[in-house]
Image (cartoon, rainbow, N blue to C red; front, side):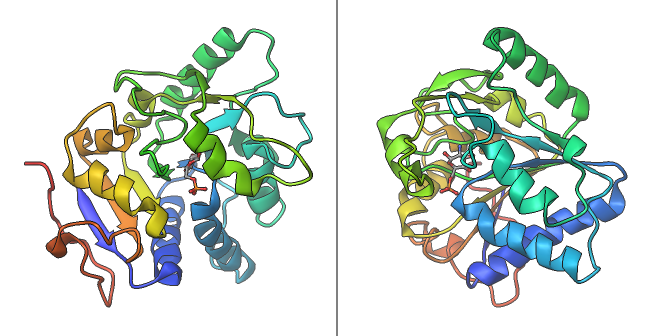
Length: 260
Ligand code: GLP
């Protein structure tokens, strides 16, 4: 596992955008897995900026979402699919038909989960962007999720609902449940890039990278992957052991393996 500590959030956003840009230049069509959430705002803005500057096209890219809330109306701006449409489809040349997400309105959710699992595996995701919850979740795999879990309906913890409440406006409450790719699903991607910003993530980041690999801390599963990188700002890296948390003036890979 590689750990990269960016000097600040701008540098972090640039690094994530560089990884996406490298993928979409090399691979046509490119298969990109994306996370939603506040952490991705900077990287997505940087992608839009590069597109507007004529430096980046997402026309040959397929985007797969990690998860989706259950119980919101199809037009609700808080759904992850609508967030991606607003942030990327409306602002770049990413085709609306190239945004793939589980359908939370399918009356047969088990069939929907099985179908999405098949679609994601069939897509052979080349680069999967990930955030991390303050409780160590990835996508909506809450603590206790099996490392062999696949796409399924999950109940959200109070911690996760409280953490995500800030993104909800107009009196809409954070749903109690969601569809999420499983941990095994996520680990099928060729490359994983977990991004974390801010002091609130420092504890879960330190546990994920330096504690035991355990289902109690779902993000620790990344250490089982052969090509995983974690990109942090200094605040999110604050509780790592000193040689892991040194900010890089020019970002480079530390090459540190934290569990062997
Ligand atoms: C959310 C989402 C994840 C996201 C993570 C971090 O609950 N399900 O996909 O990456 O938690 O969110 P944020 O970036 O808003 O802190």
